[in-house]
Length: 167
Image 1 (cartoon, rainbow, N blue to C red):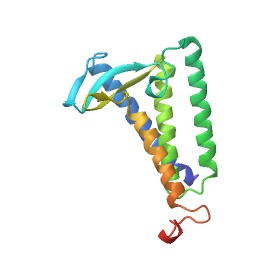
Image 2 (image 1 turned 90 degrees about the vertical axis):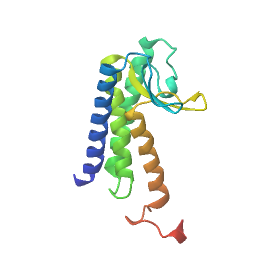
Image 3 (image 1 turned 90 degrees about the horizontal axis):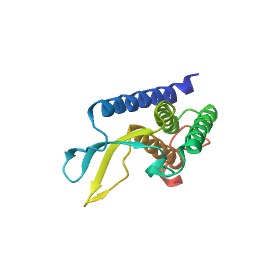
Image 4 (image 1 turned 120 degrees about the horizontal axis):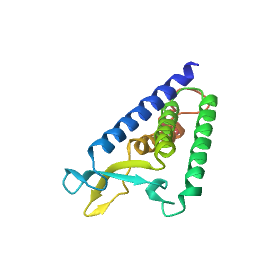
């Protein structure tokens, strides 16, 4: 049961932070009205994402996209939980998987409750906008990075980092 502590805590904290940030966004930012934080670089803007990452699939009929996205999210969450069960519990993978799970939970709550995901973080550079995202998306991205780090730096044979000569 101890091996589930890190993934469970990281998932719970991320999902809570994600939902709190989205509640703040909905209450304080009018839809599509940006709040400039760092001019030319960073603003907060309340948008509704009916698709997936980068708003892909948002132009398709929500009658079939919405249930399919919920099903895909639930299946992905089940796969993450199954993977947590077989992990040795060391390295960065448990935290990474927890963050991925927490991000999936945060976005699933929105999709099930609202029919869309609340996004609000808008980064820009030289007039180019990165697709708007949220705290759950950050957690998923950091979680994947931690999984990659785990694959590179932690061996499957032991719970210790590999020596530099073995990398």
